[in-house]
Amino acid sequence: MDHTRDADHALSAAVRKATLRLIPFLCLAYTVNFLDRVNVGFAALQMNADLGFSPSVYGFGAGIFFLGYIVFEIPSNLALRRFGARIWIARIMISWGLVACAMALVHSEMSFYVTRALLGVAEAGFFPGIILYLTYWFPRAERARIVALFMASVPLASVFGGPLSGALLEMHGALGLKGWQWLFIIEGLPAILLGLLALKALTNAPQEAGWLTVEEQQALTRTLDAEADLKAALTRPRVLALGALYFLMVTGLYGIGFWMPQVIGDFGLDPLSVGLLTAIPYLFAAIAMVLWGRHSDRSGERRWHIALPLLLAAAAFAWSAYSGPVVPTMAALTLATLGFYAAFGPFWALPTALLTGAGAAAGIALVNSMGNAAGFAGPYIVGLLKEATGSFSAALLFLAGALALGGLMALCFRGPADAAKAG
Image (cartoon, rainbow, N blue to C red):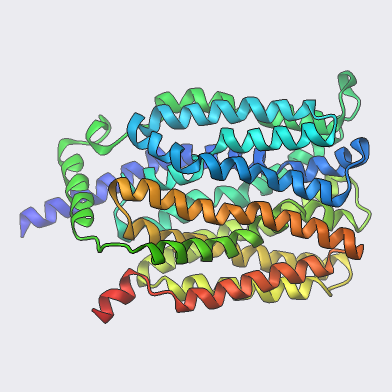
């Protein structure tokens, strides 16, 4: 009994130390990652007019990022497993930082498409690589909370990035550069610096962690190895089902992520006001992600923790299409953003529980690749609908439909806990 109690204590201590040691850096890295991915939404407030981009051109360019990302995502995750997270994540961050800064050189439709595609290639594997990396450190029962903590970086990127991007646009004309060029340069540099810091901040696995005691290393390694040994075989249809569900979730994420500044900007506000208002939905979303992920871990339930927030987001997007003035529109967008972000922690607890080893590297990347196809489709369809109708109402209804379908699909999915009860 004392031995079991000591092992439990060592495991808890190891998880606590890993959380404090790794999660703050990973959150900061993902905040910069997401900001460099979607700051084109703020740049578009000036860039589209400067370069004569139509909504469909902008939507295609925003989304083409994901084509390069998808092609290189699985090879990147396999490379992370082979070369180690520390070196590979550092390489990814330095690469995307350089390309993000180079976005300031865009001068035509083709250069816009090329640099956005190259940014996707440079970033490929970062998010699924981190999700895989978290499985090296955190037991299954902790993962919805840990993933929610990590992914809270996404709304926080907009909480801080929105006002920052709006302020950088006000630098228009400084040293002969446009405001949107300053935005790309200044927001791209932190990725390069963090990539260099990753070589010191990250540890590949518990066995290499000098900041854990031997007992803590052994307790954490035993638990993770046992979970790998007990995993059920994952069939291809289930991987595809997870990917299809993630596709619908990401449709909402990027469909609004690339366009929210312009939705709010349609009310005739200046860039700084747009940035400040954009931060509101993401602040509430960050809080909801952490609380909802923690609740999912405590209850052990996943399906309803995915479905309910997605259905809430769908209803809120439908409301936002007809909400009229800025205040009810912001309320609707806040509920919608809160909803689809809250679902991400419980969602990623499913594939990380079902996939381990080399299968996890490829499987997690495959699920993320399928979802990121929506990163191309969502913004492009939103742009086409905006151009065809002259407003965002039809686009917001499209996003509502995608998330409603995702919520219903989540209820049909049988995760590991459900399978255990049935078996």
